[in-house]
Image 1 (spheres, rainbow, N blue to C red):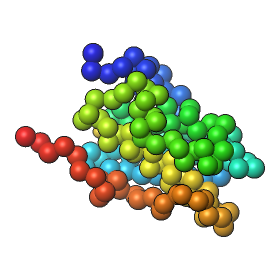
Image 2 (image 1 turned 90 degrees about the vertical axis):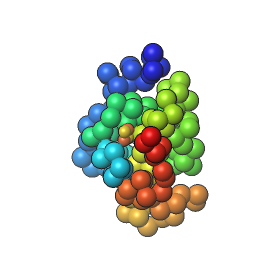
Image 3 (image 1 turned 180 degrees about the horizontal axis):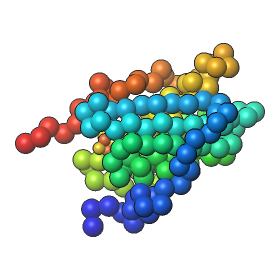
Image 4 (image 1 turned 135 degrees about the vertical axis):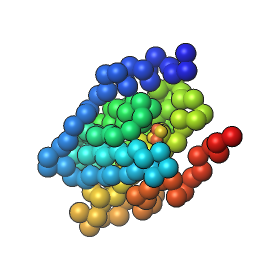
Length: 146
Ligand code: FES
């Protein structure tokens, strides 16, 4: 089996699919190389992420990592939310095949983009948060085709 049971579960039954209408922050990130796009909505109050939803136009691993990333971020403070890296998402999913690691980077970047949007809207600076990119393929290299 190429994918863990958890990946299959979050792909077949993704959690938190949808939109938050009055979201505190929205982040959209794509990867021009594979064409996948992820959009994450966060509801933040008093520095705590109360709710998270996503819409992902992408591969199964992108769906599973968005599902897990939104699950992980709920209930976290903003500083704790920054610790949800693509590695943390992959670990929570019991791993991803190497060729699919970049899909989890999309999830990390989309979370960061939503936090960045929240910070901008509220005129605050989130320490340790770097300005996210719209297209993660500019910053990484997918495995070359042989
Ligand atoms: Fe692009 Fe998975 S193949 S995010």
